[in-house]
Image (cartoon, rainbow, N blue to C red; front, side):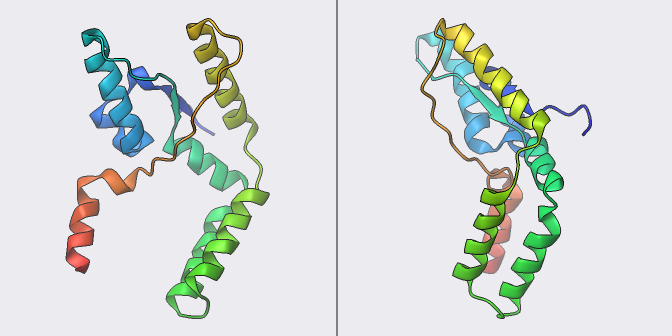
Length: 144
């Protein structure tokens, strides 16, 4: 694991961070930074990064296994439902790397301290990084 960030507070994010944390997280950061001063309440929090996700994949040796499953679908050897189920199982059976787990716990503790509460209810959202890049819509348009 290198020095890249695993977690970034939402208030530090903006449009330029889509590739690192996905569009939803980058948009929340933009709203916090630009609307908070105008009295608009935007929930705070933190984002796990694409680097953290890649650490998870590497720790569990998932990339070659996912690639193999995806290829079996592309070759029409297996259905999308079968491949999706198997990939989901890989993720559920995998272990979160210690560094990633500790980064999430530390970010949660900092966030709780900022709100003055010991324990917080939180929402967990997924935000893919590539789906919000300009090239993604170009690829989609090319296929239609």
